[in-house]
Figure 1 (cartoon, helix red, strand yellow):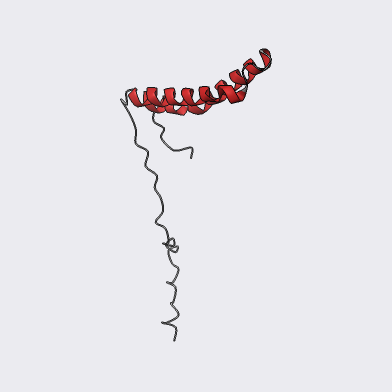
Figure 2 (cartoon, rainbow, N blue to C red):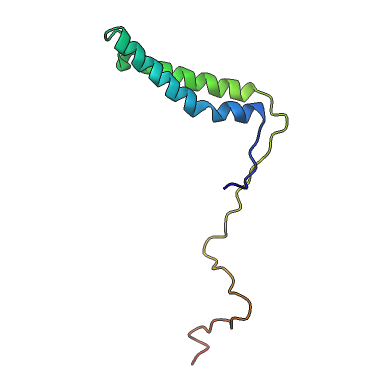
Length: 98
């Protein structure tokens, strides 16, 4: 994981900020609830979180992607066992052993 290349374009940078911005928004909403004696109940302010996420997605969609790096995972082929180490005799199937 330490060797993976991360994209530094503006779109990906904004998208990576979504989690921290949502946590900060939650903190501000809970702080307002504590300071103003219940006028900012979570049941009344939860749409703010959706608006913040939507705004970040909108800004990310319109941000330039200059220098964008496509990261492609190198998935191992499912069901194919790894090749044996060099010098190991090939496995014998049950039908060949008879």
